[in-house]
Length: 117
Image 1 (cartoon, rainbow, N blue to C red):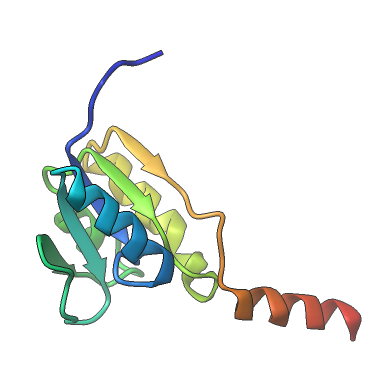
Image 2: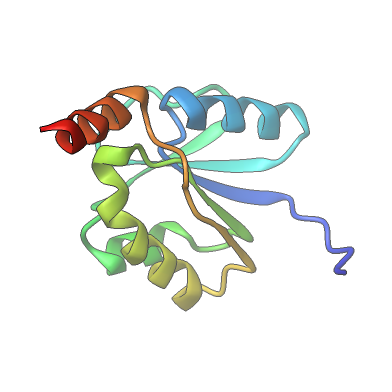
């Protein structure tokens, strides 16, 4: 088991419901946090905002410079962009990629209702 300690994180969806909780915890631990967003939002205090095109691996690659860990907190409606994010993380030399397996309750409800029709 690795004893490596990480101090630099990028959070895809870092201003969303789940991502903001992850971001807040990382900031409280003194980590460097890059929030990846598709629009110019007001990023949480203590973070670095990088506006990216999730469909463009080069845009993602450029935003991941100096990042050790990428955490995907993408919602269900944006999960199709996760492979591009993972590929960009690998190309950028990121040490750890944490994929999103969590989705919003609305996406779950849509999925469940499509099963009953």
